[in-house]
Amino acid sequence: MSVSRMLKRLEGPQTMGRGPVFWSAFAVVLAVAVVYPLFADGYDVGNNIYFLNWTFMALGLSLIWGYGGSLSFGQTAFFGIAGYSYGILTINFGTAYGFGLLSVLIAVAIAALFAAVLGYFLFFGRISGIFLGIVTLSVTLALERFMAQTAGPEWKVGSARLNGFNGMSGMPPLTLPWFGGEIVLYPDIGLYYLVLGLLVVVYLGLRILVNSKFGNVLVALRENPQRAEMLGYDIRKYQLGCFVIGTALAGLSGVLYTSWGQYITPSSMGITAAALPIIWVAVGGRSDLTATLIGTLVVLSAFQALTIYGSQYALVVMGLLLVCTVLLAPRGLVANAGILLASLFDRKGRSK
Image 1 (cartoon, one colour):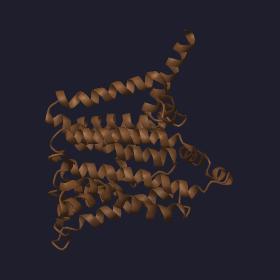
Image 2 (cartoon, rainbow, N blue to C red):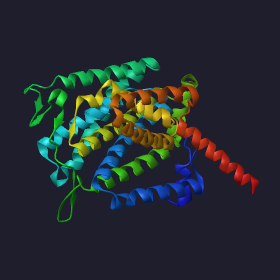
Image 3 (cartoon, helix red, strand yellow):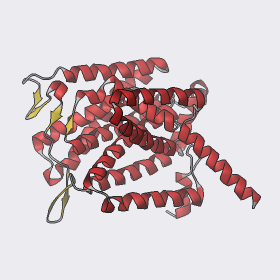
Image 4 (spheres, rainbow, N blue to C red):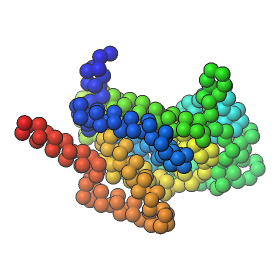
């Protein structure tokens, strides 16, 4: 496939950023990200792995909410399902001989299967709008409460204890099979490169998806589902497919987070955790993948910096930021900044 043909698939009306300036900036940022661990200390690299882990969940929510028009509070539920599944598998079977990667795939598949079942009843039951948000939030909170009461010794799967509020811990580090032995990805920078590589693949893959016929139909049903249905599209199938892909990305976040920290707790699925992805995506710009990615990383960095003064203050600031974004920049702060920059470049191009 030629470069021009590939760029045509990556660029389109559903994504911000196109042309040599954008892709040159993308290449520079990627190059900096690749060489960064060579000059940073281990703590900072681990901290950035933590930030990158959450971007998959945010991109999935952008697909579900920004492109599909379905506001879901269920991302952390599938984050938890995949995270706990990965923990159970690796505690019982380890990560050697490639089973770690197989556990990643199985855990994400379990989350996607759960999403497919839930999504079938939601979308084929014609549940939409605020009611879809209520149902997904209810499922998330019910799952969080259930996992919180699994502290007794009877709550275990094989050798894996669920441990209630304290959460599951003791997962072995993720390894990759290689010639001459296994490569341990944590605490080495190998996990950073794995997460970064996955992020690039997911980001570019989603750009292709949303600029395809599938993405165009998603945007059409977001704007007017009745009209899209009158044109002959079974919007329920498109909504379900979008929901499963988006929640699978949340599951990938859960697996990578569990592998990074070697633990997972029910609080990662609580109401506060469920609201945070909404803030990241809204502030960045829910209808654009690039804006979502940048906004998520900026907000996560700001949130961590604010927690020095207390997590409650950080949450208040995040809430105020969401309110201001909804009232003053409903398209998202990063998305608005991108539109402004694009208009400036267009003016300069016309003036020459």
